[in-house]
Length: 551
View 1 (spheres, rainbow, N blue to C red):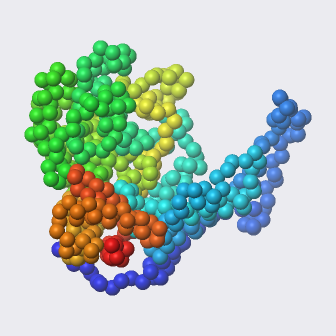
View 2 (cartoon, one colour; view 1 turned 60 degrees about the vertical axis):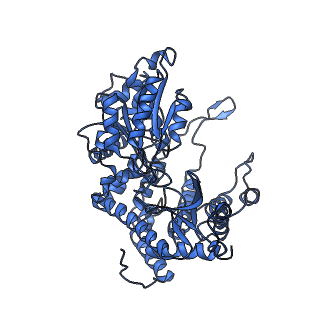
View 3 (tube, rainbow, N blue to C red; view 1 turned 180 degrees about the vertical axis):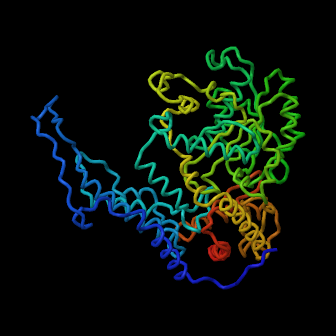
């Protein structure tokens, strides 16, 4: 049972002042200093200005080529003012619980408020700054402590600074010559993540999302099963079949469609009441596919399902994969961060036996969207063999440095963001123990919320949470004495959408809902951000009760 240290409710003013003071002291002045300072302001002697030699104007196709066409000083001034706006309106103001999570506007009204029209001539900087302010005003504040709507939330200041750096440098991570620092950072981060999975060695690549990681893994497994597909394509292949949980992410089905495997060849395995894949049912499906003359090649397990937060039994699934020679992929996009916690990593017991793992640090570890890795146990360059195209203008083999650091040919992308840098910066700032505490606190808050739900009239858990997903119904007063038959459930199905509409229009918080596996609409609350407190958990239940008590 939880035992709160104090029932004292911290005053919003105190929270605001504390947060503002800390940020301004440790962050504001170091991040948003003036972009340029004149030498005379510092008391240093002025240096002579370097004036280029004057040359005759060069005109080509009616275009003057002398000198730059941009105004650097005006651009620097705009960046400075925009950064100040971001600091004040997003970093300082948005996480304040007295502010709205969103300022809801219907689409047609929002189109009018934003002035989305692009014109023949550019607009003045003050007008652009006003547009920036409007964008911030009408956007959802995902760094607000009461944004519970998705599997990402909150703000990590170190990751944010890393994003500012990479956006300003605008690198593309494919060769060492253009991204020396970021390629080494990615190598270091992948190596550390591989250690936490429990592999002695491995490989990996950061990519644009967990869905893409799952697609990478599926294609890699198919290439391992039949390498000739890279050159010969789908013609002549047997009917390939893969297996995944009925609770798995929809990207598994999408990947099968995209890769030409076909959605009908995705065999969904039955789950138990908690949403975990049943190993015995998996083995039946594998045997069924074999009897049909199909070629099973992949099993996709899930560690942390989207709705219930369920973890498949990886050890038992690994046994079946070993028995039938199947590639074992684990989609740990959501639940992989539990590996950072000595207390909770048991949720992923057996993950070291996987051939590939998808893990998204931008979820519970808050590295900032997007930050997603596909990790592969193979260390024989399977990724590169599967995806390489050997572009001679990019991956030349006669460069003056070690070309093994040109890792871009392992990716299906050419241009690729340095997403690992955000996670690296956060890890460096917090250390492994700080990341572990982030996981432990999120799960503890989920436990607290679940206990509070069991104590309150009108609230009902679907099941005890295993991870940070808390699924529950709110039963309004008008339904509390009704017999739980078809009419009751039909009416209860309307409650969550109605309350969601009210909270959105009020702007007090954001919380997801959905029907699931025959159960009518219920709320799904997800705890991620370390900015979330026990008071925010209490507020969530109080607010739902307030918004739904007249129903």
